[in-house]
Length: 213
View (cartoon, rainbow, N blue to C red):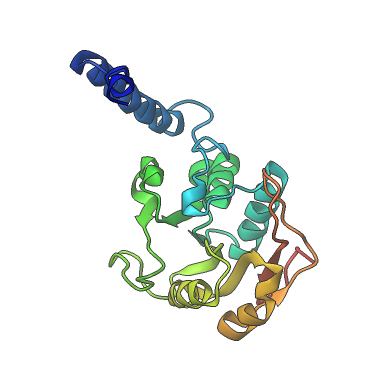
């Protein structure tokens, strides 16, 4: 056994330093992908992190939800995307500076979007910057990261604080009863799709007359 242990290869300090430099450059390249070029806001420009329960929408779904948010917000309306980065990205990709939107997200990689990024942890639903005034958004689009009533209830606190009234929620079909309970929303006919197939069926819910029906 001792001889086998002696045979285990060890990285030299130079090789270890080179490996660490490689990982650092890889992280920096990932950030640059979203901060430069025409793909700055493309869905998928920041890769999904399944450990954070991230699953990006398909291009068609992201575009449909972005268009719905714009229509619901109205002319010069403001849109908040809570844990829904795909919708935010598609809004900016399609409309650019013409749309007033912000992204509330736990993943700090989205800080590449500058002042429109707000760090958000659903466990502290009202720990928000003073710049986010109550009832200051014409519509809030929310996609709670976990299919649990606790996560939905806490996210709902944030949504109700931010919205002037309109809510577009995306979550599992199994959350229909809880969605109605905490946000007063009803299931739409439109069925959102993700870029990768998920085991759980997802649906959209709204509390206003929408184009998703």
